[in-house]
Image (cartoon, rainbow over all chains, first blue to last red):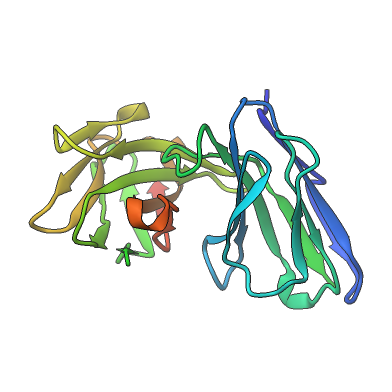
Length: 113
Length: 114
């Protein structure tokens, strides 16, 4: 019974288009994160949110925008998609900000063609 | 600034063998050290962590890790591996001066031969 739900599991997008990756966590956690994993970079931290506020942004491009409509939601909007954006995007959460035990979703595998 | 190094991209052992996955870090202050496992096509799962106290930390499924301040290491070990242990293992470090953001190693793929 997954406690962090990511949708969709697989996503194919056309270069230049816009997509939203969905993440919901049912662990009652206060902090949520987005990570990216590709062949080029094994695991890359993108964003952290705490109580629906942006805490840290390590993504250089403004094409990536997290959106938190509820405490347990943290979606990721990606605009003007490029083939280099192809990766698996993981949503994660921890009880509190800076929590050292982080729980991960199963990921959304994005392919940009 | 903390860094984490996992020197072995791949480790191959036979089922039933013992294994050690190496993790070295650089940081001068107090840190949390942790290990995560990622099975193929899945998200990462927490294995164990260390902050203080007994330098040997027991995790799930027979895994344990030993902290060594003198060697700046936090190696993961298992006495007898099972085929289901085949996965990628990530070491991570976090510290107060980076808001405890996890800094990740590059991962070690553990391959278990039958």
